[in-house]
Every structure is written in C-alpha cells, then in structure tokens.
Image 1 (cartoon, rainbow, N blue to C red):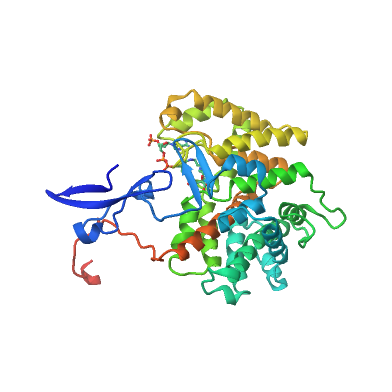
Image 2 (cartoon, rainbow, N blue to C red; image 1 turned 90 degrees about the horizontal axis):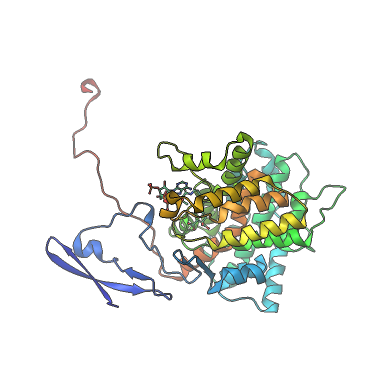
Length: 428
Ligand code: SDX
C-alpha cells in the first residue's frame, strides 16, 4: 500500500501522507492542504471526513462490527454490566475487582444532587421535554462544582468529575420524570445497583418500594451498554467541538444532550414507537408505510432504519431484538408493536429501495420496545439514550484533551453577494 496520495490541481502535483489505522482504515492526511494548495475540501455532514484519532471505539460499517476498546459488542453485552462497560470506555481496560469496587463506590457517593438544585425541577412546566431539563440541569450542576469548571482531565479530578456526571445524569433523569408526573422524588438508595437505583428513583412510591426484578435490571444494563459509545456520531462530535474551545465537561456533555435530541439521532427511538403506534392505530398494512418511506415527495421516513456508517446490520439492533423477545416472555407481556416492527423489517429485507441503499434496522428500531416493556415513559426514551452515552461523551472529551488540542473551526465556500456599498434608507 502506498504511503502517499497525489493530488493534481491545475496541472500541479501535491503529495499528501496516507495514514493507516489499527484495522487498516486508510486516510489522506490533508492538514497541510490549504497552506500548500490554497484549496479546502467540501464534505457536508462530514461523511468522508476524519475529525480525530481515537482508541475508544471501532466501527466497521460494512461488516457490522462494533468494539469498545477492542472488545466485540456481543461479548460486552453478554458479559459486562453497564458500570463495567463505562469503566472500560473511560479508562481503556476492563476493571479489576478492586477498581470496579472503587468506581462503584464513587458512583454511589455522587448519586445525590444538592438540595438547592431540587427546587429547579419544580420551576419547569409539567410539559417540559425531559431532554431540555437534562441539558439545563447538567449545566446547572456545574454551578455547585466551581472546582471542575477548569479543565480537569487528569487523575483524581477527572475520576471524580466523570463519576459525578455518570451518577447524577441518572438522578436528574428520574427527578425530571417524578416532578413531571406530580409524584414525590425518590432519593438515591446507595444499597442498590446502578440500574436498580435508577429504577427505584423512577418508580418507587411512598408506600411501595419498587421491586427490581433481575430480568429488568439485566435488560436495562444491556440497553445502557449498547448505547455507551459509538465513535464520532453527531452528539459525540458535538461534545468534542464544544470541548475543543476548552469549555468544561459539564457544558460539553450538556451540548451533547441537545445534539442527541434530534429525531435523526437519539430522538429516533421515541419516533420509532410513535410510528409503530400510528401504524397500529391506522390499521393500514406495513406496505402503505414502506411506500411512503420510498416516496421522495413524502417527508415520511422509516424511523429506526438506516445509518451513516452501518451498511450492514447494526449489531446492536440484532442484540436488542433478541433481548426484547426474552424480556417480553419473562414479563409475560405481549406487545403488538413488536409484531408490526417485525413485519416492517421483513418487508424491507425484500425491497430493493432499502436493499440498494443498505437501509437496515439501527439501534433505535427495537430499543423503544424494550423500554416500553420496562415501563419507561415515551418522553424519557432519548433521556435513556443520553444516560447510556454519557461514558462515551466523557471518554471522547478526555481523549480530546489528552491529544494536542485544536479548536474546531471548519471553513466554508462563500456563495453570497460580492462587495457592495451601504444603501441609505432614502434610496432602498
Ligand atoms: C443513531 O452516527 C451514529 O453512530 C448514530 C447512532 C449512535 O449510536 O450514536 O448509531 C445512533 O442516531 C442511529 C440513527 C437513528 N436515526 C434514525 O433512525 C432516523 C431515520 N434514518 C435516517 O434519517 C438516516 O438513515 C440517517 C440519519 C440515520 C442517516 O442519514 P444519512 O447517512 O445522511 O443518509 P441519507 O439521509 O443521505 O439517506 C441516503 C438515502 C436517501 O435516499 P436517496 O437520496 O439516495 O434516494 O437513503 C434514504 C434517503 O432518502 N434513507 C431513507 C431512510 N434513511 C435513509 N429512506 C427511508 N427511510 C429511512 N429511514
């Protein structure tokens, strides 16, 4: 393989270094392009643009491969808890028993939020979208931790800030749900697991402690593990862009929450359920919706299908589909939406529009059915995605600071007016 790429512009040759990644991904290093050629590249949506070097997650979209720090997602999903997976993503290695114990203790220690913060929840209207509350409260928390508004990326300070965010994101989510439902908040219980504590804060009532069933605890762990990181997706790239200005970790992940909110990204899990509900209520066949998704004049898209990187099955959707079956069976639940989802998937696998565009179910297609079975309300689905993605956001923010930090500042091609002189009001 050549270690050089040659560009010819107006008859002049320019050589650029080729970079090869761990898995032989190839890349043209164009860091000197503008200085040597005076040109920039154009790549709306950055589908062909590498923004960074990273050792956290590897995705092979053609083969449907996803690995966290080299471990296949299938193994992590089967064998690791979310806390173990979060530690692996943050620190690069699976935790030893004493490291896991210390990490879990930090998460327990940081679960409560300052009582002065609690009244902020009652300031939100009951209809406030939980993602707006989550982003706001993540920024608000930083006001109670002025010591971390600097850039703590090393040692104990990073460990503390990372654990604080990983733990409190759960508490904020649960408090937001309880306040919106007009129910008293449940303070964290340090004797419960990460997921058990979240379910307790969400669903315990004054006279009835929520009973965490092992099958639900397992399902929630799996959901969070599968969402823990996914290389340079929209929200993680947002965290990196914000962090590149040396903004603190709280404001960087709060920005990530906002990027995740969109229906093309993390908001898709709730959009899938709304779509499946519409199909169920309309009584129309799946083919009606498939035709709409194919119609260029119809803005309707098959939510939960397609992916910028996966041009094969998203391995997470395969794992989630299996887990949904197990969970519904264990809880003796029957969800008609699963039946509709299976019909849609089957129909697309035979339809050239989807096959020719490599449109397969992504992580969001089955994840909502799992959350429904657990009893999570629809408007909390993307919040659940954010809880899962927190380790990935934090690890990418840290990696940004561990490398030579450059502020993100893309260029553009200007297509506006040429220079012109100001027109006084009387002549406009
Ligand atoms: C996530 O990046 C990540 O890693 C994200 C994520 C993570 O873990 O962080 O994996 C999580 O966000 C998953 C994606 C969730 N979003 C959805 O399910 C929304 C529905 N899907 C899409 O809108 C779309 O597929 C995207 C946004 C996921 C990808 O968009 P791209 O790569 O920009 O692709 P595109 O919009 O250019 O589509 C290419 C073609 C187009 O048709 P043509 O112009 O070639 O004729 O495929 C069509 C699109 O119209 N197409 C769809 C479709 N998705 C793409 N047609 C119908 N239904 C769809 N869902």
